[in-house]
Image (cartoon, rainbow, N blue to C red; front, side, top):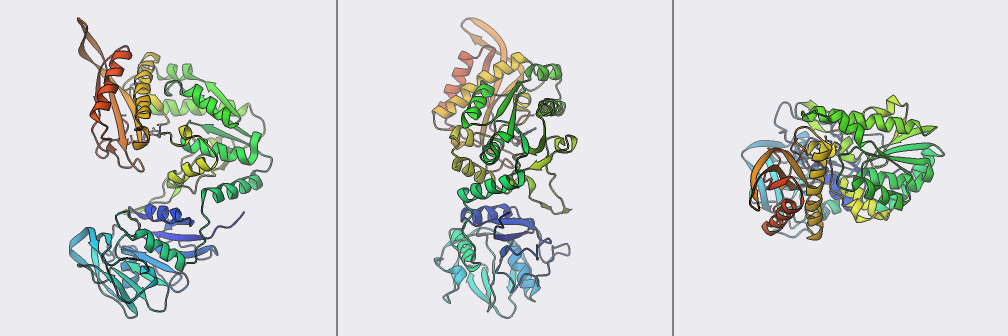
Length: 508
Ligand code: XMP
């Protein structure tokens, strides 16, 4: 295995910790996020350390404390917000709870005494603040390198030591010199700029070849970006020793099974397509509760996958498209919580398989870039997220083949129109929902009493929060017309204008 040099980001629970990692990776430097108290002191590949912000106050009893002696003077160190306050208070400085919390933009007054962290940063540049506490007294040997109107120590450097602190958030896009400052820190760390999609593909393919050797691997394709990129990467490494299984649960989009299957075959993947829709419709008959539907669809998938996988002899590995946000150990303020790492329904244990997850160090945008590097078409790489239970959770109430057909047609018109009007890539995800009510309408001279379709389109960066997409009225009008005129059984279309929170992206 080739050892990648890395920057370690110690996570004190800030909402922007993942952003720090993404910014460093955009600068082609590999980094990892670990909980604040799990610094890998023995890891020889660490070239620098960043302390993240935190929703806690260093003044509080329950504040996350950290002995910095294994880090300070041994590695270049940058403290951000809480991280900066921690460095100052651990060294005998004073941090005070402010009367008012400072949120938002501030203008940076860069000290005339030049410091390498501030190299290239313009005086008066806008930075983003988000803090309740302020450093009021700096310890000896700490030099202020920038201030703002409200904060005298917006940035400091410890003399003759590669340690810096910034009160503002360089990782946030509103901080104009954010990239410059992070880039300066990486230069200080002498960090190798070798984290690129091409180098990732080369290293991963080599590592996969070594670790998998001649073993057989199976993978469940969903049509989504992660499992598709995972498959193409593995295919490059082990070719026909990879078998992909793509299950039609009858809850996919219109023509999706056929088109995605043919796209996969076109790429050269060894794919087995299984039409199990009848089994799913039978199991789902008369089931209205969303969670029960999810369980049935999940179990149905595992049953089909297991049955098909057992037909392939000598399989040793199960490949999964797990990505970095799924495995980052996240902190919660009530204590440490480790995000559960989803396996496909415990399949690896059940089938006595080892897990291979080649994308587990990548963020979603990196997965897309790797996909492009592998020559995958935009229709696969830029595909919107789609829930595992598919249209099963977009048909409110019980699911029937007839309802699926209506929803598939309406959804198809919506998605095709988004593509045609170049709006598809401007939204995070979109789809149609079939409501469990009928409404009165009039078509020609006849009164109708038919289905209502709700359209949902959101903007988001991670699906944790989302806003309804402000699609043009003319566009919505034409989609509505087309659905009502062409989809039999629908006489009304509504647009969902709820954000998340308090609503969710899916209706069930
Ligand atoms: P919500 O509705 O919770 O959705 O705002 C957030 C993201 O997760 C997707 N989603 C699911 N994905 N199984 C999945 O694999 C599910 O049961 C499921 N429910 C929601 C949703 O489409 C959105 O991208």
